[in-house]
Length: 342
Figure 1 (cartoon, rainbow, N blue to C red):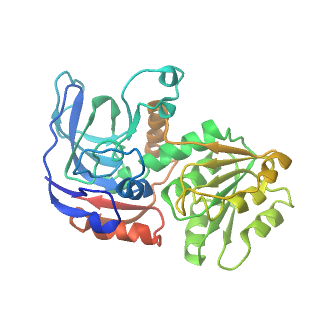
Figure 2: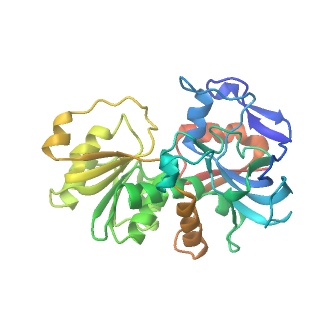
Figure 3: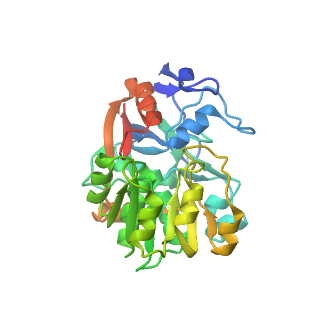
């Protein structure tokens, strides 16, 4: 089969498009014919690598998969070739204290499709049968793939980790990324007031169309001052900051006393310098979050199927042009998800 793969860690120059071995389903697995696969910034970090990450090579990323059942491994029942499915990208390898208390993504044995195992940036992918969910019938494949990892991440981040309550103010730092486009919608669905920071006027308009109550164009104003003005100097109860180094100090300034800052990424870099005095003086909580449970995923797909959440697709690119699609994601001019289509 064809895939967008790499044989060693590095920058985008290590990516290749070409033939790789077809996956063979092990017992309990299903091979899915990929019809759409969303790109995530996670793919970039995996390709670059980090100390301790050891992957069988070649490796290919891709956590967001929508497609059709192609083959069943031994012991799999309840699925038939040709069924349209989406894939929960969180894979549980074993039961432990974290899975038993309903928090599998905290477990060290929790793997992410495309990160720890070969993913969907290919024509076929093998996944556990328990990770399959019927695809919402009203969606096409790109729209079905777009909200999966980012929606799952945003749901756990806001609802479980931040404990978002109706009537609170949520600040979403950055409007273009997939997690943030879902965070705006989920926060509104939960009854929050949403303020979004956008890089330019175009992204500001698109964030407003998703339901943000106030959108700040950071190219025209100081966004921290604007947040304080909009909240009568109170600040935001919950701040979503996936940018990291470039924005974390500003997010702490914009947070309300007793506020919670949730972090699920670091697109500007993982090493951030902060003023600890903000944490104890304002009693701010810095909260890490990643992915979610299979029940969270089922809830997310149900909301999408009911039309209560809108998938946000920036563009659909042929798999054969996948390297250029990754280049576009790294450039950062997109809004929503870039989708590969074999």
